[in-house]
Amino acid sequence: MTGRFQHNPLTKTGLAAAITLLFLLLLPVLALVLTSSVDAVKAGVSNTLLMPALTLTLKTSLLSLVIIVVLGTPLAWWLSGPAKPCRTVVSTLIQLPIVIPPAVMGIGLLQAFGRGGLFGPSLTEIGLSIPFTGTAVVIAQVVVSAPFYIQAATNSFRGVDSDMMLVARTLGASPRRAFFLVALPAARPGLVIGAALAWSRALGEFGATLLFAGNLAGVTQTMPLAIFSAFESDSQLAVVFSLILAALGIIILSFLLMVTRLRNQTRST
Amino acid sequence: MNVLVKTKMLKRRLSKLCVAVELSVCIGFMVGCAKETKNADVTPISLLIASSMTDVFRALEVGFLAQEPNHKLRLSFGGSQALRTQIEHGAQADIFVSANTEHMDALEAQKRLKTVTQFAKNQVVLVTHAKHKNTMKSHQDLLKIERLILGAKDVPIGAYARVIFDQLERIYGDGFISALRSRIVSHEHNVRVVRTKIEMDEADAGFVYRTDAMNRPKLNVFALPPGSQISTPCLIGLLNRGHSINESAQRFYNYVLSESGQAILKAHHFLPAGDP
Image 1: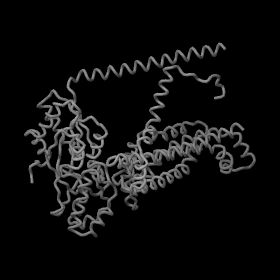
Image 2: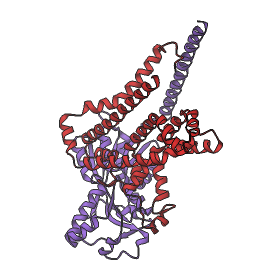
Image 3: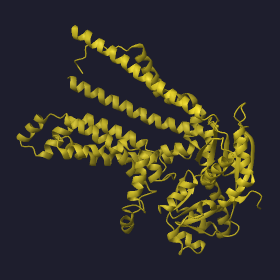
Image 4: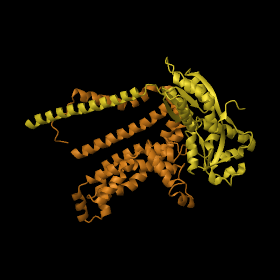
């Protein structure tokens, strides 16, 4: 990073390509703002679909985030260890949900936890039924967004100075104490970024939720599903709902920028 | 200094290479597209068809092409409400086939239709998974089910289900209907998703069209009481596409209404439009 000796000038074609892409990336968000009106926002905010969907989205995505961090941190810590065949296999497998489309994961989840799925009969026996419930929403969100956290956390743990861990151990700290007092604080910025990425992914989960959890206001209808439903009756309402979800995303992005800046500051000092 | 110059040169060469690759990809793509249009000297007829009529329109396509091989059809399926939204947002289609009048009327009010006609009739039925076949005798048995799925309120089958609920309420009282409502677990976006989820045994019961339940071994049709049965229109509309008139679309439209078209509809258990 520091070895850069020039400011990467662009050729005219390169500049044109970059501007085209930038335009494409920013235009949808801009269009949402431009095509909406104050009256439409007022009508959207007072729509009965909004509050149940928004609270459900926040509740389920935050719960998913807690599950991802609690279960994902130990896994990421283990994955950040010295390269071994089993580690490579596991870390590759974990990335499957990133490359497999959410809709496919939704069908897979139905085939696994649905009443007619692999574990269906045994789940029914103990009186558990997952599809069409909030639990299904959370499972779908965890499955599609956990890889983003695990990947970021693994990279972050890899950056932890192993000498520091060694010193902590020689000073008599147990592995657990060394992890919590040395590794975790050192890796924290990376973990926070990973968590924010996973959370934003969970907020926007659509395909797997629609297939695995269904669509019922107040129970399984998260914001993306509410947007989809609204679009089929009143596209202006869908625009307002989209704006609200986009605003949430922008808040997460600003938070990420803050964390990255803080990290760079602590690094440079 | 030398290194810097070399890197610059390399970069320039690389960027030239990139442009060359991009260009060749673009040209290849355009050539590919041109080829496609060259092969098909007829403009394809683009049809947006309500999910419940998926299979019958695939059959109608085959029948039509057997009679008039010089045509090309592009079929796309979805909930009528979704297709209507697509048309309202500028989807280039020649024909819209809707499972209710509401969505067709809306397009007519927007002057997007050249002509519209009812070409068949269907009925709404309540189906359960076949495993409930022997336990579903009376309406009280319906309360034994755990998961009932409906279409969303803008989906024709969802709107019809709400009408049937009102009629059942009149017949059995609001206690029964609110108990039944409490079993609703999802509002799906088209009738075929409702059917699939019941066939997968993820849901116990739901409303579908009579034709959707035909020859489906995993489904069991629950007999609704007289007075709560509704028949539904199947509508076909020719869409306005600016100045150009799609002759082929008109021919397909006529074919659906013709004797051969009606025979195919009958074979798929649709009722004639003229039926009371």
